[in-house]
Picture 1 (cartoon, rainbow, N blue to C red):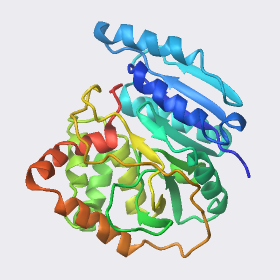
Picture 2: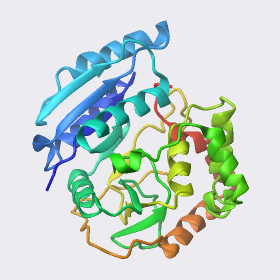
Picture 3: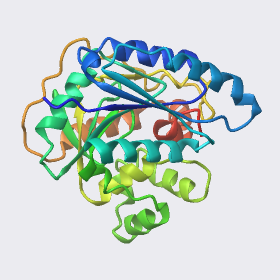
Length: 303
């Protein structure tokens, strides 16, 4: 097994960052894995103190093969920081596992990520590996594919990240020309297209919706686990873009998820289950959920 380096993006939430690191340290492959930490600079005086606390903490981190800290000299913002960091690490190492400062991992997260990166490295249709799955009531396969890409605990190779298109308008134009907006939006149950429009209009700073659409338009697939290996603790109102919600809270896997070769096609049954999950949320929560669309893809307090 070739162990992928990890890149973690942090900003101004010391408690969240500690929880993320503590969980990651419990992974069986942590002490054999290189960790790169990108710390964004404060955007104003109000965030200086919290950023300083985070930076003090990250310099104490151990439990990994190596820890490399890169403190940005200016505020990069959400998209700038992630695009810069992922590009640098994946270009140097050929693959990367990506985390943010509000993601708590299962002890088996790194095993799943590295197993899948090895298995599908030469499969051009597979663009990435994802660690989070919604709290669905129906049983899913151990692993399955969906078209597109995602952003809560993920991994890719250089060949995958090379397909990332930064120009949101270019992506939207192609979506509309090919009449793919409804398909992108899980048959109208989740409004990713509007999020892309908002990114173009400067209403959000989402790198992730552009990553999703870049993969979707190229008909690439992402591998998902049937049980989530990620829990997002950031939807607690403490991030710049955050509201509060438990709609996406999950219990993370407490045993290893087997990654085995299978047909590289989108699992339409799993997609339908996710569509039903979106659709069946009660009306008030569904309304809130639409308000959290940018949180799903952009949540990180550094924007």
